[in-house]
Image (cartoon, rainbow, N blue to C red; front, side, top):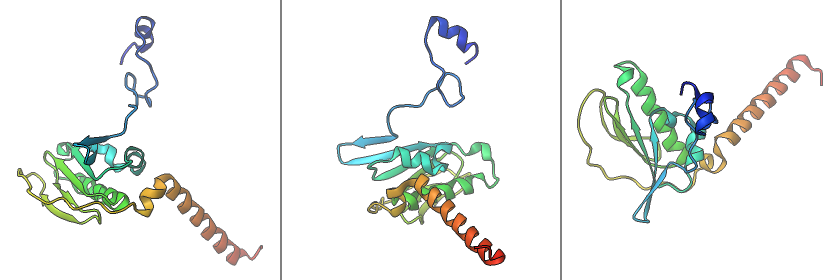
Length: 171
């Protein structure tokens, strides 16, 4: 928002916003509860490609819903990459994914990352599918992406030290 410091003199809009003026992080998760029986985690467009964002916004979901506008990718590899990211989120969380893309690839992904049904790129249509049940907590969803990153970095550091030790025999 232009002139934010000037406007804040009269009305406090705030500036804490991850570098984008006029916006701030919400206080609730992305989960919606329907009829006290099903909980859905909803992700819009690119926020679904970040494992840590998904981890932070899923606490007790039965399903991930991904809404996206892949039109700006055109017919390049973007829509294929975008749905592959959703396959990874399904596997990580052990949750089925319903993906709706205006011109991209829409479909249903099971908790194992398999695309059950899909509408190909640049085609209109609908799917009438049975949504699979979620898995129990996966090891990944239990520990979260940050802990996995720390574990992987530690393993690479240990591997490097062991290889360095063998080559230089300094220990």
